[in-house]
Length: 253
Image 1 (cartoon, one colour):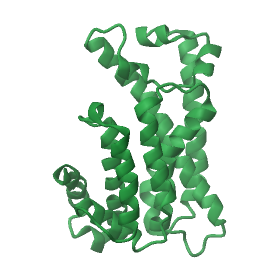
Image 2 (cartoon, rainbow, N blue to C red; image 1 turned 180 degrees about the vertical axis):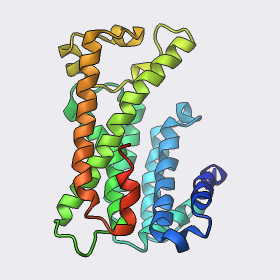
Image 3 (cartoon, rainbow, N blue to C red; image 1 turned 180 degrees about the horizontal axis):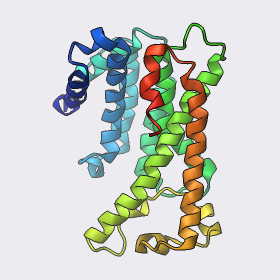
Image 4 (spheres, rainbow, N blue to C red; image 1 turned 90 degrees about the vertical axis):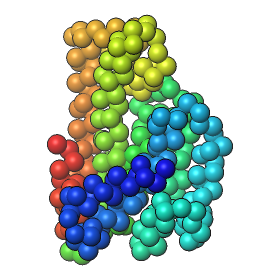
């Protein structure tokens, strides 16, 4: 399994030819953190996802305690341990991410945005909260720590909302490719069901790929919501340590 995630480190070293932690230590340590997140996500969204049982995620959550206490099972554990041992990283966002992966196993519809927001927090907002201690807040910043964390959370929410809108199109294209009238993956479109109904749309409209005026209005509102969170996130970028700002500034594009 490690060889798959080694690609992430190889890519980082390709972008930064010298040893990554010497040229841009914060990015090297963030890569290690993100590799753990990807490892967890692969359990429910990877090639073996259909075989994953909730107990596998229970074991992942239990292993977090070991990692944060320096008891390591493999190199990926060691990579995350290296990051969390250097910064005041809280374990709770990691636990919450595992909870989000559990939701992926059983919850495929969200009745309203409040429900969807909670899911977005679990699977993506948590990454923002994990990252702030590593990226650091600029010494000259006058912002409160809470406001910086709120901006990091907003970035995670915005990114996940964007992913959801992207996945709607990708999964519908897959459904058409395999010529199915209904497919489990396409059913998991994650848009708020009450807003879909208010727009006069149904699941059948989405699965049929009908691009109507109602659909355009609905999608415009979803995009505007994601942009709102991106704009909220940008307020916190300038408060980060200077070495951490440029990749975040490029995120929205």
